[in-house]
Image (cartoon, one colour):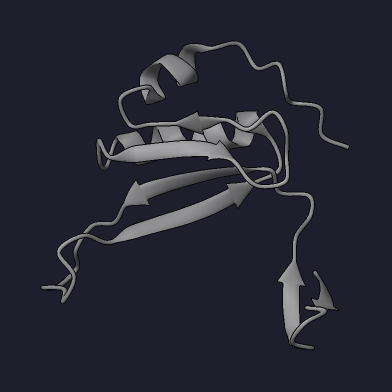
Length: 97
């Protein structure tokens, strides 16, 4: 991981330019939480890796979403209602260097 400085603040910021997909999921509550709703997010280099993780999370919760991170284009946002359909799509964007 390399660090860069934000130009306007001179604050170090972690940069992971290779990750282009994310999967967000509702977390299991281990103990009563202060927040009624808690989510976790993981990032991935490829759509295939994101899909594999999403399938795993669907066994734990039905509230799973995914998409591409900025500035990756084309922008994709997959809602929890669309997640099964997305998992069944062929993988066109799996070119990982």
